[in-house]
Image 1: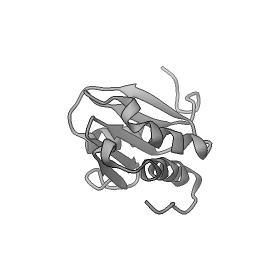
Image 2: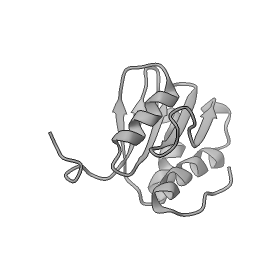
Image 3: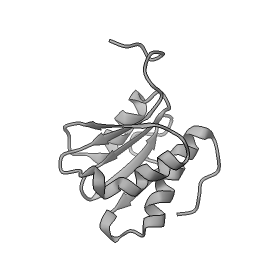
Image 4: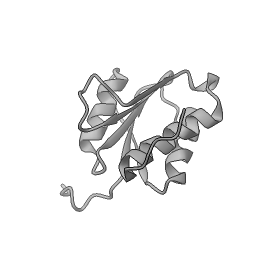
Length: 118
């Protein structure tokens, strides 16, 4: 088992059942634009908010994301479990710039920078 110091610092992204990472690709591009690495990890479960909070708890960068087919949630380790930072539904109906800015904002939380407007 790796210690926290041996793990690569990444934003952990939990992919719940039915989550096609391609639906949320623009969010991941936004994270990459800010220069922060992320790791996709399939998990079992059904509650997106709980999965995002768990990802934040497990991420060395304290930021976690979870998604299913209809919803994406960004959480921060120091927030209450039921109170995520960002939630977005229905990726196919969202403008590309909103999805990209959501990813930018997840990375900006790590970097301590102001958020972009959604």
